[in-house]
Length: 144
Image: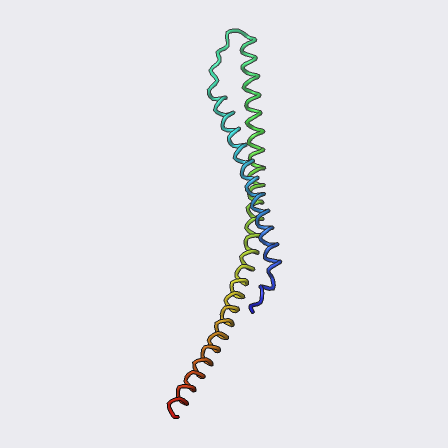
């Protein structure tokens, strides 16, 4: 009977850690994509504004609106930079978790190959023994 992989529990833990890191990475990438979409939309709206000032009050309102839009763009740019750093850290954490999983997966594959070799070697020994007994019976039957 073949032995189970002695580090199977640790491998399951590494896979759970990898899945968790993948979820955090996906979440970080989604937040970044959402912020970039908001930033692009705000920039497009600022560029598309075509209001014309007809008096001083309208001019002041237009200036205030554009200043608020520029401030929003600045805030979104800062948020986007922070989210990029967060996504990069999440990617590094995922890569580290994946590397740990891969190392154990390779050990598991070697273990499985070793167990298969041991099983096949024992099976071949049994087949050789059966063939030897059959030959011996044939030669005994011929000599009688």
